[in-house]
Image 1 (cartoon, helix red, strand yellow):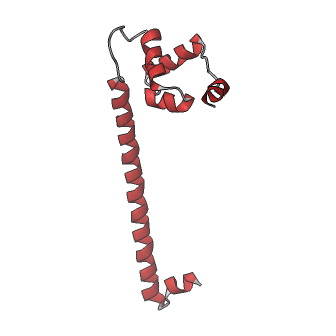
Image 2 (cartoon, one colour; image 1 turned 180 degrees about the vertical axis):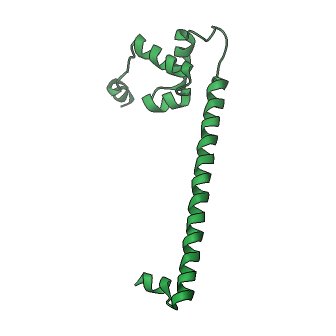
Image 3 (cartoon, one colour; image 1 turned 90 degrees about the vertical axis):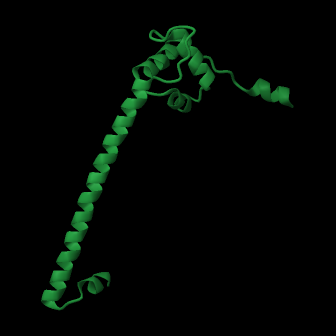
Length: 120
């Protein structure tokens, strides 16, 4: 039974240009090994082997896990996104407070329960 399953399993072969393009994306910091592995369903071992084989930057016989520059750059980008989201959240909270105060003033002025009437 296992021999039949092994025979049915297709073996994928990748061209040299494809391997070099993945290595190039990794070296430029566009993607990490983990991201490339998830996108193309390729094992980490194969990707690292290709990096060592086709890299123009990586020296042979030196183990590289991930470029520090790409991870710090991504961290800075995430921090910028977080700051922008916090800013937007603060602005929305100010708007909510303003509108609630406006409703309270309108209720006091006109003696109408606006929140109760708005639900119906």
